[in-house]
Picture (cartoon, rainbow, N blue to C red):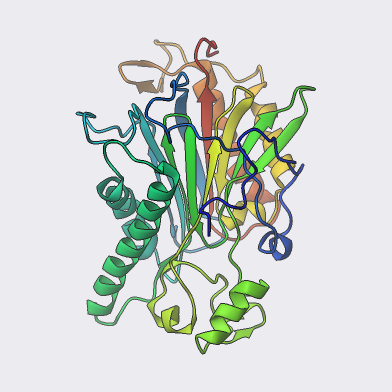
Length: 356
């Protein structure tokens, strides 16, 4: 079976949905992502690499503790890229949101280890089929991380019951490889030719009520009651959750590829606490309103509380992106989300464009 058989041919633009479907529908619908063969041929001319910058906002909600974790690596390219990356790739970036449950240990462990395993398994040198090798790398990295955590969890006394969803993006130059388990989501916000907002889903929800997921669980001897595995676990794929691994819960991610275009503005990653109260369109418009809010000013050097980064004050656009993350997380709680909320926005800055 072809690795990306559900993607349209490189020359064909897919039909993009205006919004992500509800969870009950999204698990049944394949995401149509924009892809091409960029990076698969070492002789192919390289596109100018976009600059990426991640921002974060989070709130505990009504939970006693924060069980979410995250990681932002705008550039984790090895110091010496000679023969250490595939097909003349010059930039590697990585982003992840990890929604923990039954404790924070699984999410923190994955935040600390998954990206290291990915860099270890990432193919090197000239690769004939880069897409296939990257998917293999991601699947193996998820399994390695899951195995290592479960070993640590079972050695504890009492054994840990923690588990976590994972939504991660590995960006090689201008190509996004997304891998996820569970019900956190990633969405790419794009402007069409008519300046209309369109959204590209970069993840797939994994819930036990989905037909294929439920069949796998039942085949493994598990049951689905009230939309949960064994009447307890709300997701059908995760890292950790050792007590459910024998019931069909798997750590194998869905992997998708998407090539960044000059129409792309930002990527939004959020745990399910965000998506319970926001649609993709609502969240994107909320973010854009904050980015256009002229009342948000850039801090001055002599102002108290100036936040410096890399030796200088933050640019206005950076301040607004941070504000958008925090306001979106706060608004999710205000709208009734009682769970932890994590919001990550990745700004896509194209070459020759000007940052505010």
